[in-house]
Length: 551
Image (cartoon, rainbow, N blue to C red):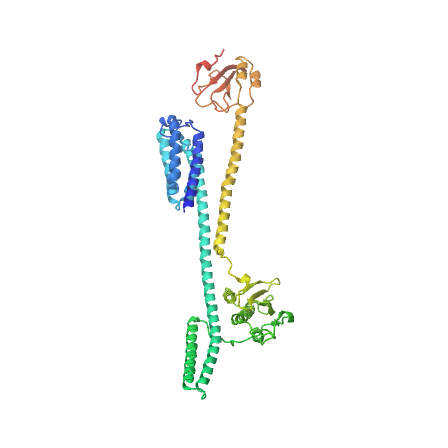
């Protein structure tokens, strides 16, 4: 949380610096003035206005996370103090940024729409009250649409996309939790099956103990104390068998029926039973070099195989049984090969089937049987791998220890983040990358267009600029053709605003820049009957000393 607060503070300070930079760079420019005239035009060009604007922008940034519309209203008010059209060099950037953040941070759209409508209506009222022309209000509406509404819509679309992604991954996380719950239930069921297997094995051994104790109890050659001890041993074995049956009965799920296959059924018997039911299955005999040591048949059912530990033996049986069941269910008509091979201190079980010869009947299962196999093999200290085969079929491979010790690569691997969490993190990175592109690419395009426009504007200004030497060289009375040959080919489109009227006796006048930055002061050249009749330096406030008398 502390790191998040530091990050937010750094972002807010960077935002404040970004929106305050145009205010500092344009200090001293008063603009046209807002509706509260005449004092706003003079006040807005002072250092106090700059300082107050920066402070208010800082307050807007600080309150922007909780009150984004208040921050946007602050930018609108500051822009209105400089120009009734709201587009100013000082606060246009702040207007666009706060409008985007308002769309990004506001959960509801109605307050923002009410603010836009209020600004538009108030602008119309103030425009009419100030006696301005109606086109000023139209320009203001256009500024609100371009600099406020469009960034707000962009921010709102970003917010909606983020909400959609968040909702989707919340659902994915919920589904994954449900799948994990199903897998956990299947693991518990498999453990109950293991408990049932252990009950069968231990019950058999306890029954033998009870039987031998009963034989000792009736042996006439033993004394009464020995027969009493045998009786107690028989009763204890019978009680232990009953308690074991009760415990296993509690562990067994309601929908799990009693086992229908013998406890000591071998792999060969499982294969023969599956073949008798119509499954095309083949038991591959292992090479002689892969089987070590003589001994009776174990659960593997292979000749010459040494007895396996109880957990490993039952796991081999369970892997073959479940794999054959899945092959019959999902790949009907396919050839199935079962291979049980012992190498060194482990035994390998592989059940592979080819592609289905005909469509499977019924919907596909959720794979809980494989989850149970994973739990069974893991508890036996082995590993299980399953997946599609290159020929279009499916294979299940288990490796199990012979001595009961867990295999080295069967140890618990480091915990990995859930799939939904990993995908969510990847999606977040993609969204952040997309947002950076959505911001940087338009900003780069706008910067390039701005440079092109600035270059074109500078080129146009230079084309209309008349050096002072050229102005001094022409004389009143010179032929129009001679004067125009010395002047640039491009003139200003008309008389600069705020200058004095043209001479009444002039046929026509043309204006050229005297300053590269401003339209006024400007040089005015007026012609009468083909000759230069007036040349004048016109300014916002006409100065008589800059005027040349006409002949």
